[in-house]
Image (cartoon, rainbow, N blue to C red):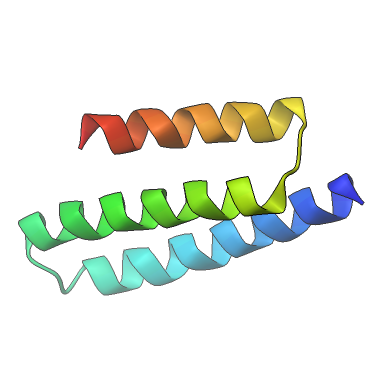
Length: 71
Protein backbone atom coordinates (compact mmCIF):
# COMPACT_ATOMS: atom_id res chain seq x y z
CA UNK A 1 0.00 0.00 0.00
CA UNK A 2 2.80 2.43 0.84
CA UNK A 3 4.40 1.76 -2.55
CA UNK A 4 1.12 2.61 -4.30
CA UNK A 5 0.85 5.84 -2.30
CA UNK A 6 4.45 6.73 -3.09
CA UNK A 7 3.95 6.12 -6.81
CA UNK A 8 0.77 8.18 -6.80
CA UNK A 9 2.55 10.98 -4.97
CA UNK A 10 5.40 10.93 -7.50
CA UNK A 11 2.93 11.08 -10.38
CA UNK A 12 1.20 14.05 -8.76
CA UNK A 13 4.54 15.81 -8.29
CA UNK A 14 5.45 15.30 -11.95
CA UNK A 15 2.09 16.65 -13.12
CA UNK A 16 2.30 19.61 -10.74
CA UNK A 17 5.84 20.32 -11.85
CA UNK A 18 4.77 20.47 -15.49
CA UNK A 19 1.83 22.75 -14.70
CA UNK A 20 3.93 24.99 -12.47
CA UNK A 21 6.65 25.41 -15.08
CA UNK A 22 4.04 26.33 -17.69
CA UNK A 23 2.25 28.82 -15.45
CA UNK A 24 5.39 30.32 -13.93
CA UNK A 25 6.63 31.43 -17.32
CA UNK A 26 3.81 33.99 -17.30
CA UNK A 27 4.17 35.00 -13.63
CA UNK A 28 6.26 37.85 -12.14
CA UNK A 29 9.30 36.70 -10.13
CA UNK A 30 7.99 37.59 -6.63
CA UNK A 31 4.69 35.86 -7.30
CA UNK A 32 6.64 32.78 -8.45
CA UNK A 33 8.44 32.57 -5.12
CA UNK A 34 5.20 33.04 -3.19
CA UNK A 35 3.55 30.35 -5.29
CA UNK A 36 6.45 27.93 -4.81
CA UNK A 37 6.30 28.39 -1.04
CA UNK A 38 2.54 27.77 -1.00
CA UNK A 39 2.98 24.62 -3.11
CA UNK A 40 5.72 23.26 -0.82
CA UNK A 41 3.54 23.97 2.21
CA UNK A 42 0.59 22.11 0.69
CA UNK A 43 2.78 19.17 -0.29
CA UNK A 44 4.06 18.89 3.27
CA UNK A 45 0.49 18.91 4.57
CA UNK A 46 -0.45 16.21 2.05
CA UNK A 47 2.48 14.05 3.13
CA UNK A 48 1.43 14.36 6.76
CA UNK A 49 -2.16 13.38 5.93
CA UNK A 50 -0.95 10.36 3.96
CA UNK A 51 0.82 9.12 7.10
CA UNK A 52 3.27 7.16 5.00
CA UNK A 53 6.29 6.28 7.05
CA UNK A 54 9.15 5.31 4.78
CA UNK A 55 12.67 6.52 4.16
CA UNK A 56 11.66 8.05 0.82
CA UNK A 57 8.80 9.97 2.40
CA UNK A 58 10.96 11.08 5.28
CA UNK A 59 13.59 12.43 2.89
CA UNK A 60 10.95 14.13 0.70
CA UNK A 61 9.42 15.71 3.79
CA UNK A 62 12.78 17.01 5.01
CA UNK A 63 13.61 18.50 1.61
CA UNK A 64 10.24 20.23 1.46
CA UNK A 65 10.60 21.51 5.02
CA UNK A 66 13.95 23.04 4.10
CA UNK A 67 12.39 24.70 1.04
CA UNK A 68 9.60 26.15 3.19
CA UNK A 69 12.04 27.37 5.85
CA UNK A 70 14.29 29.03 3.26
CA UNK A 71 11.37 31.08 1.91
